[in-house]
Length: 606
Image (cartoon, rainbow, N blue to C red):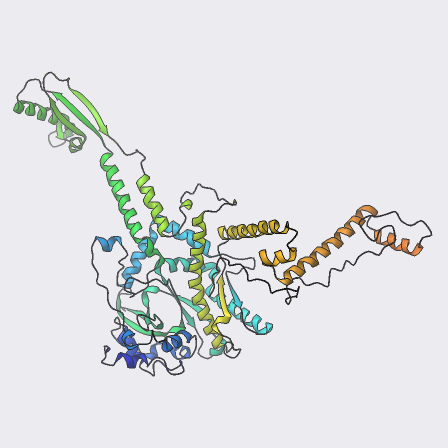
């Protein structure tokens, strides 16, 4: 398959990744690659427009590229095709269903208009409120370094770098807005900023960029690997600062941008669609039904008159003339005319909309006047409420949150949709955490801490704090079920309590030893409290005097509380030391290894 510049697609496929996966993309036909795949690029980008490009070429994760390059299914000539355009049918189906515009600025304007709708805005706010959660340490995102023998000092240094990197994004103040932008637009772009003379200091700032001016450039339609980004920089007119004269296309290396997307594509996989796309049809239906309800009520709101006029036995023409005479009499209103200087009758068009005239023949009732209409306040809003609930369900938001007067329930029961809502938020957090992890690894490579310390991407996991309300309630319910099962099992004398702790409570040996240690400490303190209650705070001195006197003076009375009483016993050791508290290595209680931990709801991790 030939590219736009006449070069074969196979040659361009081999140009952007060298044998070591770190080749210079500009030195290997990067411009041809962007020209073939970027149909929107009128002029090939120049490397000089992005002076930091060369720093990111050999930095970052290359594992996805290496996997795709060695895959039999993904690395084929027939699969190396650029994206095709979408045929746009401006029909009712296009309006109601998920046919998004191919033009990105227009598409984003449409999504922002949907997000400004009151019910949609409320649902998105509910999601964002549950997404950003601050723990007891004041952190929103945490780092977990696992499956590595790295020294504790190096782990602490990596954690300090992570805290500094997260502080650049200022999630505590801007995280809510970032997630709202992510849900509405489907993509987030953050430029990783370096200082030319201090590259080994790593990333010094993170800057949020407008989504409508950035476009990812993909490998091909199946691997969906981002190879680069194109920044469409607007050049404004020197005469009119609101008019854009032209655009400059600036390339960004894939690791130069912290990129987060929703992971959802349109029907032909040409572009990313945001989470808010799920409610497009419900939003259209709700907005139209609201307009129709308003129009219907406005039309039926005026109070009208119905005149049934007795015309006796008049022929039809005379009866109609008689009705027209009455109509002109009631449709006219007296007013003062300045030109004529007298009171005249003028036509009042409003009255024609409020009255209906019907002739009645002789033998029927006399002339009557009735009223009808005025249906503004019938209060029937059930169809509209149904569409509002449908809109909330399309955004995976519990419909129970629609009523602001409903109090917060923290009982033992939890609605199933609340648990689904929490899991949906965790999935959105995972998408964001994945982009943060990749950018942080790029920062560690600039600091020469990743490769020099033999770290891999599997050793780094980034987690957002999970929703704290109903998710924690669900975890508490699961713990109560485990405790109930444990109590029922330990009532059987044939089953060991320690075995039940390991089997049904998922305790490790160190946890069981720590529990036994604290039980001993509690028993020692209870003994001391009993001695103070029976003999006072100087019970130790009294016991020492009794031991010095031997059996001569009759001794102290019995103090109770077990050993160490009136017989001159020695009190137990109250030091409280000598047992593990669960923080050290795994102790051996004998028997088999502890069972695997019970599966829990997945945290927002990478």
